[in-house]
Image (cartoon, rainbow, N blue to C red; front, side, top):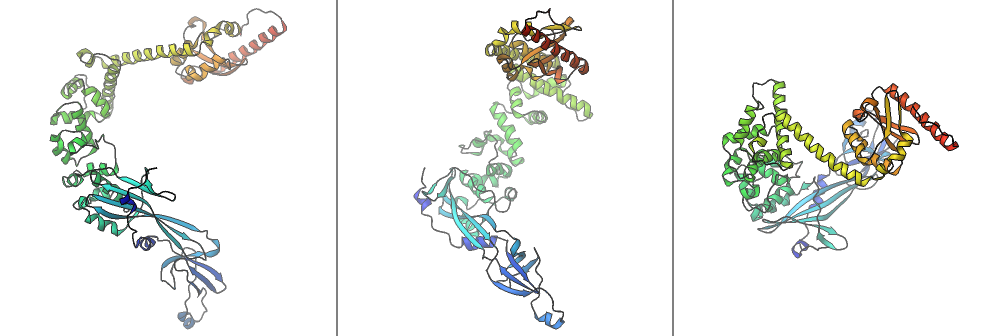
Length: 527
């Protein structure tokens, strides 16, 4: 447990924090108890007790001379003693209330060092008691020019120790903090940009704003150059592939120095940052025409996909190919045609991504610019699926060997034929995986394979006799009862017929099992 440095430990107490924080609490109550024509009132703020008349006497002159007010729940009023604005609460029906707020103060240490001090304040309100206020300093943040903030928290056993926790989002800033900021050299000329501070609730911009101003020595210049959106990202810690160790704006943003004027035009927007980062990452220098082409491509492609494509071709070649393939957008296109072109562009990007992932030569013009993009894309999908399926088949054959070894005995028990259909168990784990892939359901998952392998339940295939090698219906059976059965896409073709077929099949299974138990021999059963 690393303890705080001496300079953090030895900060002097801040005067007036508790009195100032009390004023930030707007919750003040006057508790009342009715007693006939009178009400006994108790102010939660000053603790004063007094009595007021709650019912008029009927005498106009006497009523004018008396303090008459009828207390009602949540009705605004004033304390007769301290004049505090409050609301009425019935004393016998209100529970105690605890309210918490964080108050921020600041302290100049040197021109290059500043301490942010965070106080935890609370207000405890109870009927028939004076309001209790408490104030305790709980955190300190040391800001040093060009460095990350160092955070410390108060520990009752060890005193001030290093902390990795962040700060509370909502808090109030004590006026002293602003006075101290103006005295500190590294903040002296840092403007408070309204577009940044408006993104926060109340004064909750203070900590993040001055952390960014201390950590990035050119923060003042960034704001004065008009890169307010970039400054906003620094304050909010939004990820945009920054290099926090960079000493200049271009190094920190990972862009060419020549692109800074273009950044100023967009106020340092996220889109311009990502675009110019991609340009430098690819080692290219784009013209205005190139940037227009890229803006079109970014409408429906992520930056990483654009990076994959632009590694292998220029933006002009990409545009020319898309025009030739009739996938380049046109403002005059109707909605349906525009949608089709957008899908075709996505198909092309997916095709290139798959080609690169499979290790194809990405310098080959035939690979980069196919004539029939849809057909080539579908061929790549099938090729990748075949590779994945072959890998999965090898994996399950090794993992679930008992499915294959049990096939002969299970076939003798479960194989049957009737009404132009046959039913049999799976020959091995790979066959179950293929069944699931072809019929697009989950039977090829480890759950069903494991159950078949251990004998908890078994997977059977129901198929027409004339096409017995083509997957049709998959059946899960346990203790001679069908647990579930499904065809393609988890649907049940001709449900009534096959439900009756499987019901009869199960009855025959039970008869055959009973006959075997009694020693009676029968011919192969039929459903």
